[in-house]
Length: 213
Length: 267
Image (cartoon, rainbow over all chains, first blue to last red; front, side):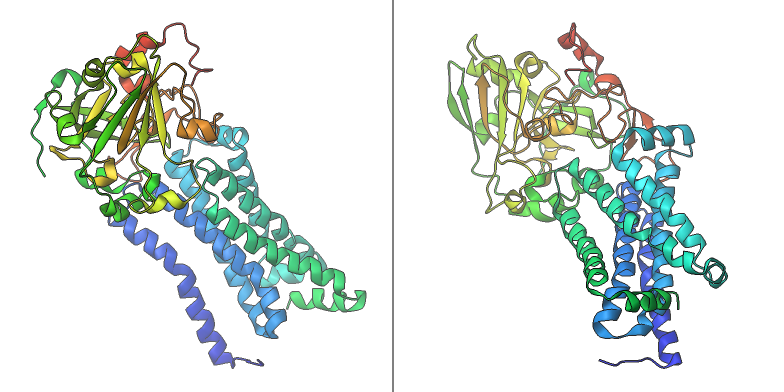
């Protein structure tokens, strides 16, 4: 259980994870450039949205995994996974703005305001921006305690993302995937509720601080 | 398998046809799965022969028609129609068939027949998607009698000069080019003539989103997306602007069927 990678092993691990997280983007870019998808806009929209959600879940899984395995070094991979979440969310949004609306911002706003599933998806994306922007070491230092407070916004983003997915699939009554990913997010968030309720107050302060490491 | 037919230019567009490959690999046919690549991957298990279509309800000559007889019931025509999916994409497809009205006249509906209902095959052993609970099976679609009798409404047995591929609704389907694609029932096993408007698949489970009429209409949005524009499949790529969607998908000759109807309410 007490696996602890050496600095070299950690670096290698991080590099592998980086490539794995980039792979879906490379695949989408390659297939689109090769003209394989029949409807490239749909292909990129769904692909980027799916991967934003998968990586969001991976980010949220770091703390529970760390607690269950005792592998505290996992937390040092979290920033990268979180930034990849933002990367795919950004790609998802850009596909919508560029290839669906051709930068017609007025039409985009009409969609955002008129259609609840887009409203919540847009909100989730906008809320991700400050998290990505404060991911640098400098920002972590500068914000101090507030950094951890700010980054709790992810607990709101995840349900918004699920709601977005749910309502999108509701158009075709196809709830299989939203149920799967909704359950995963549900478990990941409920674990936190459970732990925070069953943990004495003093210990809580210590772990909140260590989250920033 | 080739299926000879004479082109009917009166009912054909000159627009660039969608490639056969795209038209047969990008399909909504939930009986074979909900992904648009599923039908091409799974529909090979569909057995299209022997095949019969049962005709019943408000008709003077209820009967079960064998596919071979059905195909020979009227001269086959090729018609190049625009196809607009409710999801916001479109294609141009050369179909092979004849006006549904030719069949309707032969079975002689009674004066009580106000609607026509099409039932698609729903066989779990041939259609892996039927075990999913996305829709109520079998898939049912319907038209008002005057819509069914309109010469544009095509009883379809082929496309691109060939017998219909399984994933496109073999061996016999309907094509109603001025309505969203889901109104055009595939793999039909039963046609019923009714006094009342039938409960149809999408309209039945989500009436706010899919109307019974479901005429292509750029002025009536789907609750989740605008219907004002569409992406023509195979037309350029990511950077190609979307096309403006036309009322009745550009088939203005059907407008008279709906005079006096508020198409925003009866969408």
